Amino acid sequence: MAAAALCWSSGGLLARTVDTDTWTTVFWRGVFSAVFLLGIGAVRARRRGAPGGLPSTLGWPGLVMAMGFATASTCFINALARTSVANALVLQSTSPFIAALLGWALLGERVRLRTWLAMAAALVGTAVMASRSWGAGSFSGDVLAVITAAAFAAAAVTVRRHGEVNLPAAAGLAGLLGAAVALLGAAAGWWSVQPMSASPGDLLLLAVFGAVQLGLGLMLFTAGARLIPVAEASLIAVLESVLGPLWVWLALGETPSPASLLGGAVILGALVAHTAVDLRRARPTPVV
Image (cartoon, rainbow, N blue to C red; front, side):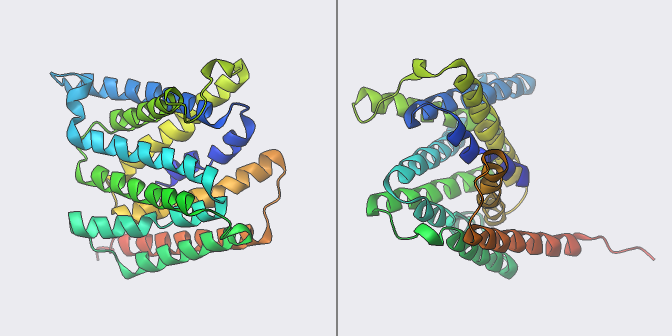
């Protein structure tokens, strides 16, 4: 899960570096992630000897996962266009709470007190990071950010409940759906998509954006979400908010604000404390 957050955290840096417009970026990001993940999914389907090939390893749970991840990705981009980054980040960080409630209702997973406390601390830390521009958004953008959190949580719960699904293929289908949304929106005249406007250098960055940042990140997330409760999986994913500004600072020299440093420290402290308690309790009792 931490490795997934590490992959996702490079998104801000890549988005700042590539020169294509937003929806062209969405299109190529989805295409490259789909090629990467569906290729891995096809290999897995062949190894399983699935009689129906790749589609037979997905089923309706795989479609639900794909729709959830694609909805989260697309709504988050549109939320950023309609509300402040601060609003989007804070509202998106409610995802662990939504995942905890869905996990309890659908899977019977009880959330431990220390997990609730860690999630609350992460939410506070995100609010502190975003405090400089909090409240500067619009209602429609805020609603889209909440949908992002809910869709991501629903996809995580589906992964946890249906671990038998070909997870790379489901994540690859999410990328394909994201690219399709970009093209359909352009066809309807809602926005512009210009795939051929990308230079060779941009295409290389977009390939990393799609295959590594989104594709590998989704593959790692879906693998990890099968092994731990969904509330904890979504909590660890918040680490993305801490690491993202760090890469922009190191690569582009944009110094994080004191609020960003303080909020990041709160989030990181909550995750470290939560993990430390888990590791201590999981330590085997020595046999005398």
